[in-house]
Length: 609
Image 1 (tube, rainbow, N blue to C red):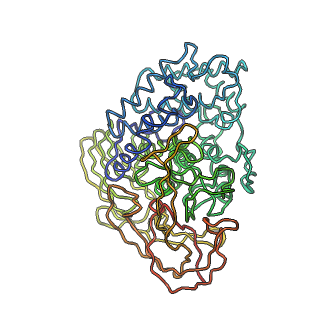
Image 2 (image 1 turned 90 degrees about the horizontal axis):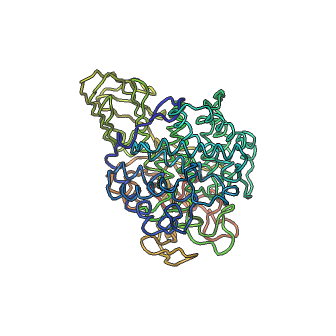
Image 3 (image 1 turned 180 degrees about the vertical axis):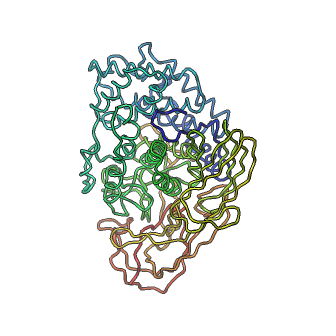
């Protein structure tokens, strides 16, 4: 993949990277759940205007294909591939001679929010990376040339979503410029930036968010926004200033969660553990971090990426991935419809239910990209270097080498690499900053942030790496604590009764297995930590890696009950902070589950007096 001239590390394609082990099991679960079946049962995909139907013809099909297609090719599933191809063929066939590609009439174009143009361009590029389809460069060229002409003439202008997501165009724009090297592409880049919003001008809004619908604090816009400078600065002829780090710190310091998200339900919501974060923001924040590392080579984005992927992503799905939440919470003791005003800032009464399209259907379509793009970020390359950026079980088959990585990380910390070199190259293995002891082939070595192994053409070698670290308490706002073990965050799980809801609303049917569920908490949750001692117990990683019934790892902690109480005016939401930290029970040894396994959970809790 070229992907723009400024990439420090390039991504391999789905032809070159394949998932193994538990990560392949997780991807198969996705394919057998909502993601792999939306075209069969959800009208906004099944009957979309993108393929000649009468249902939604704007963002939902492009969102879905952006994850569905790499999922299909990673799994080498012929049925999934054929079903995705049906949509791509329809989209290409319906492209007009002048390049316009979205399903609307000429008369509708001036009032059309061209966010859909930006998104379908990115999606077609994702398809190209999976297939190498030789038609796509020309299709994208025509899309962007038409977009340029419409913007330059003033026929269309950026507004609303397109204005706040202008940088998403650069995923395809960099590729087309790499391919054709035509100056009008630079002009298009400048028009997009000029008409788009500048994030630095609105960072002050992150400090004191209010429950108000404004684009500048919309959580999905912000999750996408973090990569804006990295993907655009070179074609714009600008100097890279690392604005992403400044914006990240502003967002995290005033709205951060233990799992590296920013609260946003639907807009920034501060530091309270009972505010939510939208699923679209989870997968878009992951994609931003994947590209931020690829463009900058800064490993901090990978560490942040791991925390989201191993916690927030699985934490917002049912085990079978047939249902998902719109909003997830750190402290989530029930997921029950609110009878009156929801706890969320601007989201609806059912936003935290596990269902088909709670609150709004954008996440139903967009959820598909999380795992596939994470997998394709496992290895990257530059010149004679191949870097193992994310240590998940994968197999790489490329021009320089065959590399197979077998591991159960993050649940266990052993890594077996089987390497066959076709050419001379360097294998670089990233070592996380939290590692305390590092071993290579059984021998302890000095801790470092990366390992470099030189290979000669024709050489085969097996490398075994392992490392150790300890669980720790992380300080959270309001004198609360969270438990972290490497990239995994742990929560006190709450036993849940899953109450099925089958119904139809606005012409959309909820029927098992794509029905909705309320989760009713059935076990005590009002605890605080009573000791700093934490012990880790590793268990079997099953076919459901983030199982809510059989978690692959637990941490045992000593805890006592406290009079926590409910948030004022609610009886299904715990208070933002406990009424008191004075314990009233004997000490208990409790098992903490990985955040991604605990669908009802307490993640931020105090030390008891």
